[in-house]
Length: 480
Image (cartoon, rainbow, N blue to C red; front, side, top):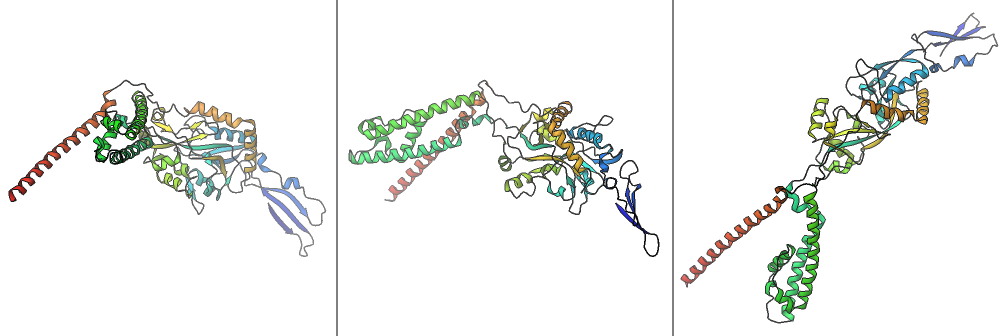
């Protein structure tokens, strides 16, 4: 609003004030319009309705520039075809509401861009920050704080969730069969039981021989090594010696009976678990949580850094580790890596559990990827406008009406069904049952081979040791 004071005579006895504004609406929005005139010698009141009317209610075809990027299902730009997408449908309603003409500033590739500290920038975000565009939209999260410094956020019109697509677990090698029947905790408990039982048997045998029948040996329980071999033989269901000693010492018979009960229970459990392992294929541990991703060696990638804006500089060491594993790749490289199934990728899920698959996440690639159970982060989807934009109030009112009627959720599902293939079919696992193969018993043959090699080395070592001992005795006798 401009105020002009015209002084009609030298004594300033009469003052004329003109209220001038620019047209704002229509194709010639910069044209000046005289709203009213006030004279100092006139007691007429000024029409306030004419001075403060809301021009945005009808823009009369005014040209508004939209900063967008091609990102399904928010914005779908196809050459020679009608513009589609959730945000484009919202803008179509906004056009009906305030009557403007829309012009798109788009990129053929998905480029969100960024805003620098001085307010300049590039991409979808930068064009609004430096006022080359009036409104920006295409799945913008309200959790990007640096964007709010230079633009205005609309109210949220839907919710988004960023989750990870990680490589599917690989089938474990067949030689793991003998070992994966028990978990690490059970194997550790079994090893501890073996050592404790060996020491306990040795101590009890020694005390029995000393106090019950003084001066008599304890048979196969003479040394700690013999006791260890005795217990190990019981663990592998081998017939053990020492029956005569058990008949002589009640305490040994009791201990051996308790060990038998424990070992037979353990063996039965192992046999059942082994049957399950042989029947159902076993896969490696999947990456389902952010912590597992941070600890793994798997990298994850996307076509823009915008996917980690919400978790960058969070101060959380786990999230910082996850961000450090993030890579930005071009579309061709993303397609190659997705088909290999060795890297993780980003997928956005909307409030209706519909997915926003990127071009590289084809149905074939999705068979090699697995969706994480824990999402990376949630966020509210907004549009950005110039600072102090006069369109913000009307756009927010439109969002309220569309949300209350459920139209946005309907559009979300409809656009996803028509223009995307959803979340994909996911990985296909072989759940069994599988026929018994030679590979299933290769671990047993490996243990046999290791045992033969070790026993052969020990055998040759004993022969060499015996010859050295004989030579040393002969030398001593000749000297004497």
